Length: 564
Image 1 (cartoon, rainbow, N blue to C red):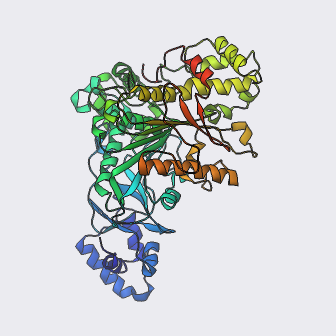
Image 2: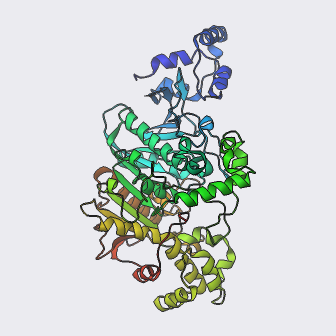
Image 3: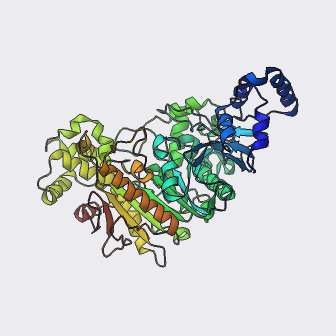
């Protein structure tokens, strides 16, 4: 540990050119063996005062750099207005040689590894970031190092379903949460799509017994890393809050039912992301067979998947899934494999192993405007157009005419487009949140659960069109209104909402209760009242908001997409 002065002295002896080359080698480490180091020292002596230094080393000349010790070696990050930042820190080894298998620990390195830039994201389509099967990296923001601070640790899991995304989105920058709440924030990358959730157990035997959940097991490995390094980064290993939006929330719900994750986190905060049921082993095997067929492989050629280029595997994920109404690519997600995931996450009951974990379950009022709002025609629907649109997009088998009639009764002023967005939100996005909240409320002797609904949205600049759309709560909870990608605006109203939501998260992380002075009293969710905090300009606690919509869609069973 120490202040890093010895390491800084050594780094000053390495030329900028050689330093850059070392930082971009296959292991992304600036480690040098003894012979190389002696050679560079000799060259540096000849260069003398003209030697160029890395930016972090210059900063360290005026103040101690952000230096930390991990189980595999030392890392250097940087200081951002009092927050120590470390990016691209490995928590597991390159997965290329471990396709569809649990990851191994990261390889150790010598010297000091650069941790000032994000690591590669998992292989995926439609992402401009660098992607690689060497993708097991996490990022840490902390107000203090090795200071015994015992700060709450906030572990964020990104969205993008189980198919895409990463922990390096600017909206997930943890610095403001650190400053606001004296907390440690961690974001993480892990394997996705076929690389993380291709179920091969029935096709290839015990060697691939947990292949359908290795993306989840990556998250378990990251949480184990966090527990092991909590003291180094000023955090409390006994107070870890997982929080995540969309697919991130679904991954948290799944972790709550995975034996390997038990005891690794102590609170759960989910935003518009639920996982009531996992994919059944039969359905997951059928998808694996379809995946193989798309690649021109027979069921007994699974081993060839280990050597095909990653891009070919990604291309094969675009084949249409057999269980979806709308055109979409092959579904990948957690699998009820009987080993790493022995039960469905929230069916027929909430996970017993997580009964003592306080939980917040949130959603936004206008979820589907985020993705169905990109089609201008959906804002100009006629009543005659609506039944066919709902048939395709509500993701539940209920007569669209019944739905339309009920919405016109409940909301007589709604236009066809308003009915479309409200009904699709209730049928495909909100329904899982209700299922989870009810399961938690039925659980005897369990920890309390709080529900929220985000009604607030920015006025002006197109805000009225998309309203409280899916993902709007991310910059509010992170307090990253000014980061690229935020659509909240930077008004006083937006900042007040960010204050309310981020303070609720921080209060929850500290105490297991989201109440704080800036919001009305927030009661836990119960089946009798269905208490829900409605975040708006005038935030309020409501009993069973949108109860009519809830009762309408509960006329039919809920089946998580991908289950069958």
